[in-house]
Image (tube, rainbow, N blue to C red):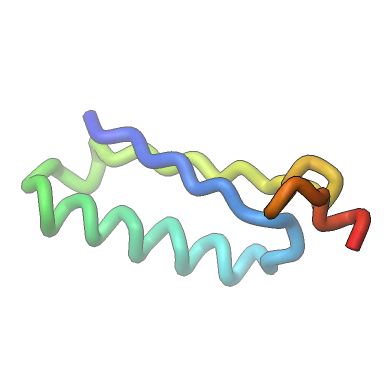
Length: 61
């Protein structure tokens, strides 16, 4: 059973998340041969104060 975690900044719409889950699932099925019913996708929305690049939080920029 493949598990995929997608971490991204918050702000995406439900429609965008639905499309993402569908496409990630299809990619896993295509590349691994797993059945669609066995693919699990987690979406983790992160706030800008929980995400940093180059030593600076995005909320501080």
